[in-house]
Each structure stands twice: as C-alpha cells, then as structure tokens.
Image 1 (cartoon, rainbow, N blue to C red):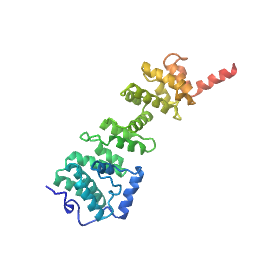
Image 2: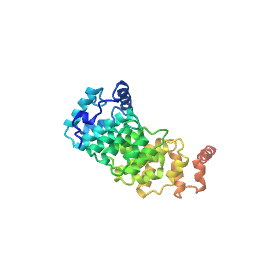
Image 3: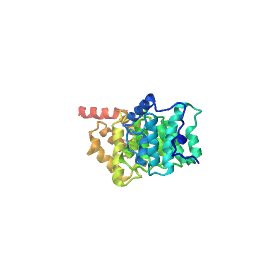
Image 4: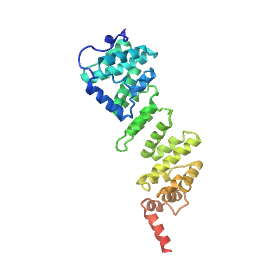
Length: 302
C-alpha cells in the first residue's frame, strides 16, 4: 500500500511540473472566472485548509507545504487522497495523454472509484470543460454535496441561453438544493427552456415557494421578446389548478406582472383558452398582435 504521507511517494521528482509561472497564472485566471472560488478550494475547505494561497502551489516548496497540510488535516484518508489525486491531474495535464500519475496513485492507494470520478469531474469544472465534467459528475454513485455549486456554475456559464448542460445535470443527479440561489437559477433555466416543465417542477414545493416559482415563471414569459408568441401560447394553454389560476390572474392584474406591456395581452389569451374570451380563432390573432391592435382600433373608433 502506498504511503501517501511521504512526499516523494505521492509526487514525481522529475519531468514537467504544472506549477510554474504560466501554470499558476492559468489557474488563477480560471479562479477569477468563477468569482474567486474553484471547486478544489471547497474540497480543501472541507479539510479545514482555508489559506487562499494554498492552491495553486507556487513551486516545489509550496507544493510540499500543501501536501503536509493535507496529510496533517483531520479528514479521512479517502478525502486526503482525493486532493492528491486532483493535484496529480494537474501533472497529467502538462505531461500529455500518456501520463497516468493520478490513476497510479488511485490504484496503489486503493482510492475508491467514486472519489476518482468526483475529483476528475471537479477538475474539469475548474477548467471550464463542462461537457467533460458532466460525464463524471452525473454518475449515479456520486454524492450531491456540491450539487448547488455545480448547478450555479453551469447556469451562469451557459452560452447563448443554451441550458442543456445544467438541465442534463439536474435530471441525472436529481439533487435536493440547499440554497435558494441554486433553486432559482435552475428554475430560471427550466422556465426559459420549457414553460410546461417548469410548471410541473414548481408543483414539487410547498405552497408559498410554489407561488413564488409560478410567478417567476410567468414573469420569464412576460419579459421575453416573444411573450405573445410560442412561449405565451404555451403559458396560457397550461392546465392550471385553481390556486395557480388565481395566482396568474392576480399577478397579471394587481401584482408585479401588471407592469409588463404584455400582461394585458397574455390575460386576454388566457381568457380565450379557458372559454371566457372570443373563441379559439382569436388566440392566433392575439398571439400575432393583430387582436390587440384591432381592439385598440375599435376603442378609438368609438
């Protein structure tokens, strides 16, 4: 069994090293992109290593110091080995595809597979390689202790309003969020992707939270440039329950939604769908803006 508390048993003594000036600068650039916190920082914090300069180590002496801090921490052997595994992924990265230092450490120390999968996923997250990260983090054997942070990062770094990665992570991991930030960001991604799916998601929460989520869903439609297009049609065609119908009408008429220029039109579209309006044929006219224009013209004529 490998004695990982011995520095030279854990780290190579020759060959390329990842923590030269360029390597450190690159890692700090990634940290800045994530508002100053990498996932490895969170792992180190779990071992009560809170020095913001601990990672990345600046040269061999700093690496030795970090290794000693990890070994002296009160965490389990698996948690300590996980950090060393992460550091060796840095080594593998600069040494090329044939380098297997992290895998060798895991094999010689009997590091459980789930820790390897987790740390490799977090390593890819820290390098903004989100697709590769999800190949590991969506694994069913993993705990969801970093689920909130993973979700926040994936939503905030979604490109061109493409939320497929955070939604794929959510559907695979099925996390129970601990923070309102993660819940709100994930729900916002859901609402902008599928109005119907967001509605059913909101129904999994207690009434007060459910109402807030429902109102957030309606607001996301009202604020969209195509509010009276497909998203508006999807919203007004939802199979709402009694409480949801009441929330919708109140939000559009006396709540925050009334401030939107689209609120009146969406309310009219809902009336038509529920049989209180002029009939199904009017829905397409309203959705294209014609019905509203005709209504205004009629009033001017009178």
